Image (cartoon, rainbow, N blue to C red; front, side, top):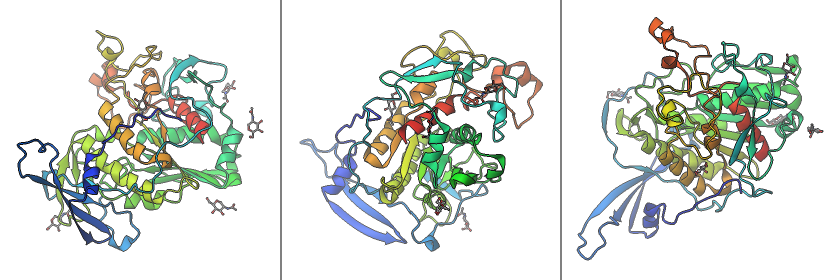
Length: 447
Ligand SMILES: *[C@@H]1O[C@H](CO)[C@@H](O)[C@H](O)[C@H]1NC(C)=O
Ligand SMILES: *[C@@H]1O[C@H](CO)[C@@H](O)[C@H](O)[C@H]1NC(C)=O
Ligand SMILES: *[C@@H]1O[C@H](CO)[C@@H](O)[C@H](O)[C@H]1NC(C)=O
Ligand SMILES: *[C@@H]1O[C@H](CO)[C@@H](O)[C@H](O)[C@H]1NC(C)=O
Ligand SMILES: *[C@@H]1O[C@H](CO)[C@@H](O)[C@H](O)[C@H]1NC(C)=O
């Protein structure tokens, strides 16, 4: 067992009600079925119970077997014509054939529970300047960071050792395969880390990188293998799917469609998904596939993420054969925006931090517990079809691992900003070499 799993009964009372089978009427719309379920309100079961019924509409996600019926694609120019409150529609995904229980492993050690150990012998696993695919957003040494301690930490699980990172062995695992990372800029950092970890043993004329696009592909000819990154910060189709020109102010998503993205990821052999920070920026607009006039609904980030995870989970439940495809979900990457959380009385952020937090179980406000619970619930229902890359706690300790001011900033910094470094510090992404290398060692360990 990778993870200790706390399965609570009746996590999903609504599902139970469906199977109590009160009134189900099914309307087929395109290839997605919309079901009206009239259910009894569970709070009205006392002696003074009133005649009262609520209506919940369930929508089956659009997985795109008939692409001619695909909803109009959103792009960064998409706008809502009107916005109303969330109607309560939910994603209904099939899980009848999913076997319960987590993916079995030969060991029973929780590799995500452990501590950081300073190890300047074996770490870093590669040199920042030796990796031609390094990003200017993550190359902290190049951008002036002189304390390099952040590169020298090894993750040591409490009850076992991680498999020793071995480039040859990793390439053998990838031979003839497509490894694809799907998600936001944190996941892109993990992808760059993986490419940097692996590229050095491939001769320069036998490797290539495609131009930056929604799907960017590193190819290693000799191994007939690719390491790819697909930009899909909300997992489902959205108006933020351009990796460069995207808007954060009005995020519109199709809660019931992963179509645009799944057509790109469905043939990958190993998939690593993430999604988190894009849901932490206030409410999200929902544009259901059946809604053709741009009438949106608005929902808080956590609720919207749960809908998106539902559409994603339906894809996993219906399309993934765990014998043929490995699917991982990386949990929240924590931020370190408030130093008072680890050093009461202080007033900074990750800027100037040189050491990890040495406080077992530390959990800051950058990691949202309700989000974790929701993710746990969704992944729990997918059973052995998905493995968890539970990077949250171990990354929580690494307040020293962020670029802060040592990266390229695309916008021009004002003199006021420059005179107050913490005001423009990046305490979200991670320097490379650094923390994401360890996420990849964990992936290697679990593959
Ligand atoms: C990084 O570079 C230094 C000096 O240039 C070298 O001693 C070291 O072995 C290199 N490390 C790796 C992992 O290649
Ligand atoms: C790395 O893996 C390869 C292939 O599995 C193996 O031959 C080699 O001995 C390993 N190297 C180390 C240092 O363990
Ligand atoms: C290369 O890998 C792809 C799958 O990614 C496979 O379809 C193809 O047959 C492989 N080619 C060779 C020459 O092995
Ligand atoms: C908004 O309404 C207009 C006119 O009805 C329609 O042409 C347009 O497609 C709608 N916008 C969206 C995003 O659906
Ligand atoms: C990840 O680990 C934390 C403990 O560090 C645990 O609370 C959480 O439930 C785990 N999340 C998942 C999705 O397994």
